[in-house]
Image (tube, rainbow, N blue to C red; front, side, top):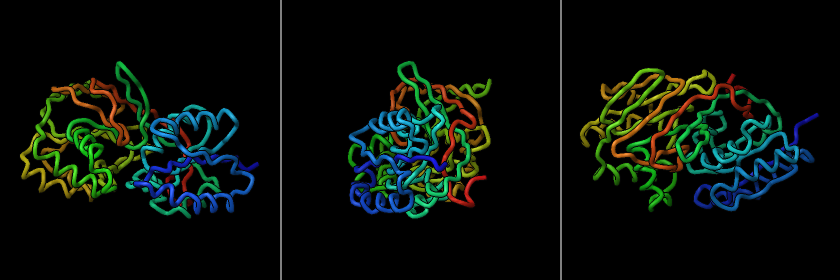
Length: 303
């Protein structure tokens, strides 16, 4: 028997494009799924998608779709993880990095077809734990420059959308940003460094196509640590464009390694970034959860 489907849509995603595009996408879903599509609720603010997803699962929905950006996908993940339900993605955000990793990109038709056909693969997720909170991420987490850029985006650059917002925020942040002291305990080894940023990636890209961890896999049982040590502003600006091809990894001040578990502290202690959203400014432990969830993918995507 074909699985029942509920798709949660975020009308605020994509700088409001989510609200405009949703009626056509919903019509596509209904045409493709018929009676299998049992619910299409809208989010009502930050955090609401997780509660909606959990409610859908409690009502017997077997596939829960996230129609929005990477932040919406993260919220739906929180409500679905550990329940046995599958996660599907319909790209409506400005970046859609996770949808791109799944082979969907920005293609609504491909997303709908994938849900109809029902092919799933099992992937890893990351888990983060602080004294005040815990949660999971599906794309990437980080601290340092990345988190400062996110603060800048949230304070006034988000309207630019996707890569443009990120690049503008990078330039705006770089003028005043200073490297932070990091102490990282990773798989039994301690690393101390003054660093510009520290990213912990499950997928390859964030920020609308920035390949921070170009060799990362969703299915290898590891997360990828990318550490950019302190460099001058000029050198940073020269190196930054390389992240869109993933060749920044070759820079001598960039360290890349895989890991299972790490704990990170920074001086001064700054905020922590999880799938594009800021959480508390306190030490954090990050670990991989192998094979944590099944996701719906199009033919020819992940093995």
